[in-house]
Length: 402
Picture 1 (cartoon, rainbow, N blue to C red):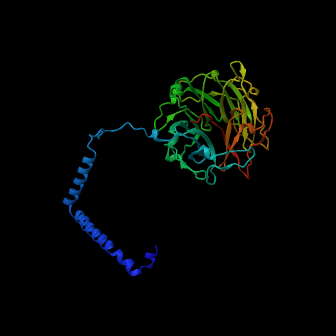
Picture 2: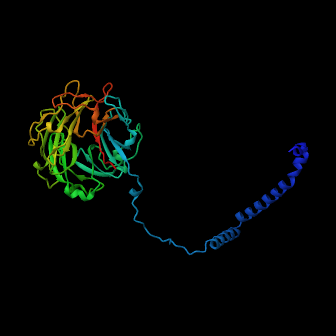
Picture 3: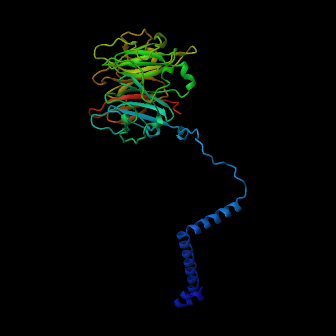
């Protein structure tokens, strides 16, 4: 080490001159060679030929695969990851999907979080929990139905507005989507299931689900509607289930699915499900299993949410089974504090719900956080609203999304 330190700088630089000169000569020769190859097609082909021969010598085994000109039976859906998503639709026809995991559960009475960015005079009207491989039916205000896979709906962030439905579905200018419904993934079950429609004026109709399996890209007639009526809900049902219709003013009626005759056509208006008072409208359609299973009582509840963010759950057996066409019974009190009913549907103790407001906020709440109360009561605060904000939809998050 000391010997190196004692050397003068001139002697140290002289030691590397020969190596540098040799490297410069080597680089010059390579530059000349590369220029020759680039300027001559004959030299280029010669280099390619030599490289291929070297590869042939290195890998002498015969080819095991074949390169053929053929069209593969390729389904792009196989490359789409299967995950739980939330689909959101706004009043002005914007739609998007987002991961369910992005909405965490909160305590009852919270403010929620941003779920979608809306323009002025626009608001969220529907939400749906599905997985990316689910087929979704879209029912328009004109009584037409369209079908689309969930993964084809554009993905958006929690603050994005989404994409216009007019760019995704062949809707006309005067049409809008009034209801959406997921199809069961097990296609073998479709022939054993029915589909029930409910309109805002209290009409209902039951068809076989097979009537809606094959839907063209341009849509298909689903139901004939009066000018002032629209489809508010569509559900899959079985003959051993009951139907519950809930109205804006807090009325509910429950009757057997088997009491509704099966319609063969798709262009009829349906029959009366509930006798509504003037200015009252149906806001929710639900299907529910019997209150007993194998002779044992099942603890189910009817969850009711009002537009001012209040709600409660009531034992399902408090909603007695009657004949269709009646005036119904009180499901929840629509007082000045509560406002009108926004949604009503069956839940279990371990379920979670997702509530959306017209300002684009959402809150995810466990059902066990919501108090059990009788039918003729007001309930408790579930979401804290601000200003003129209103609850526009509430859904149960399905356990079997995947």
